[in-house]
Image (cartoon, rainbow, N blue to C red):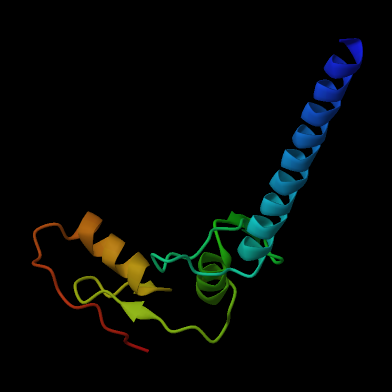
Length: 115
């Protein structure tokens, strides 16, 4: 009887070990997929936090970091001018936000690059 219990325990321990090994392999594959920034079946980019090497801010993924570097750290960036008050902005997003906050009564307009 004792030998039967020991055999069953040994078999259970072996199954637990196999499950742990498979779980670790799955986790490793998921990590590699995230590292490669592979798109999922829904064509959504997998988010991996990345840090800007210039200002050390953290971003959700490489695409957002690339946009940040382009708009905040590049000297040859385009400027966008507000058609109402002629202020200049580093990106279409910043200009659109400015217009929505400062010129609420103005109809939606197309944001165009000025420089």
